[in-house]
Length: 118
Image (cartoon, rainbow, N blue to C red):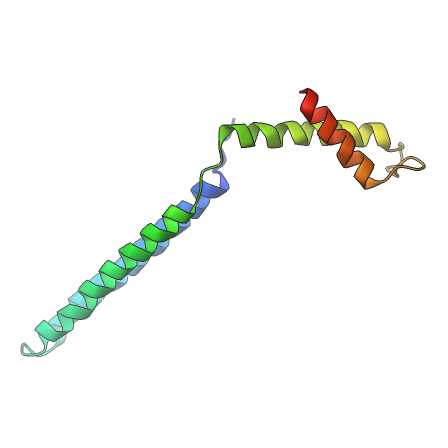
């Protein structure tokens, strides 16, 4: 079975990648500082230090916003998916149209009822 990353894991991975790239850019600036005259080097060190601190602060705040989905929510979504398949099968004709007098709202209501019974 292939284990696909959840949306939360993908978001955190993207944040980590962006943070790593930004820190690499700061390190590049530090290396380029060696090309400056010796009397300007101390001034040029302040900006990379502040930039690195800000990058870490922003990345930490973004990671805190990403919430993990609870096991109960995942189970509920999976059950609703199964219930929707069942409700659609009951309320649609073979050609895919809804049966006479039925609406999509009826399909959702039936699916919610079926989910409750699971």
